[in-house]
Image (cartoon, rainbow, N blue to C red; front, side, top):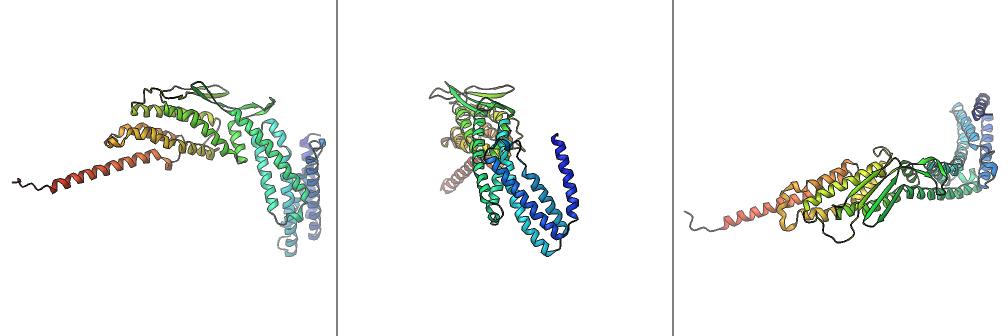
Length: 415
């Protein structure tokens, strides 16, 4: 019989049972609910036992305790509505509801962990991560429930905790593999490459995924397991070391981005040691070059590192965290390498020529427009403003000193 037919027959039986249940007396409904909860609890124990024992029949012939749980929950809601206002019945229903909630958590936790292996084989890492995260939440809620030890047995709960640890470890290993395949960093000779694969098509054993894993899937799965920031930290370190810092040191080095249907690679002629820099003697040219070269890297981050991700809606927190992580590392370097040479202390008057600072301010504005930094993180603009204020204050002090000196002169030759 097709699965759809089985679902239809089950649904029809539920409707008939609902009619019969509604016709029962209040006491009979409570007795039936106790039996239904006990049945759902037993079905859940059996399913967990079959799953954790790795019995071959568990995946094919094992009963789904969620059916029994759904039936019990449906009858419970019907009884609650029908007997509303009966204080004695309400007290008994409260007790039944506590037991039912414990069984529901146990059954849902098992259901979430049951299919993760198959989901990973298909490449559905986002689905698997969501299931594992939900199972962890359900088991934590069950553990926090003071009444749970009296409502469900300890053995199946412990079995699911053990299963959760195994599934989480397997999922984490899969995600580490996918992340390593998605983002590759390499250096050969004077060139550094950062490559992004738009999807990972096969697992570590070379078996094709039914659904290739995209960067969006990867970030979602990492976020579900609380691993996104650790992966972003590693990615930020690679971008700083292989892209931004080399271009800050040697802005004349070439930058090339090669894109195909399956991925993209950014290649940068990395700084390899002291050498004559054409731009080094001209702070203005150096600043403009860094602005233009960094804009290419920022575009690579937007288009390729977060390929297929709408960073305005999906994974906005991860994207913002990457931007903040990069900017925190790069801002002090920008100030030292570009801002200070543009406005040396010995020639503070140069700050009045503000067009020299425009490329540096435009660099920061590019990061703001890309959404990598927030409006309250415009540190370069703030530093320039501080320099301008300091310059104006110095000119004012100098002017006042001059005026005071002139006024203090005792010119006896004045007519």
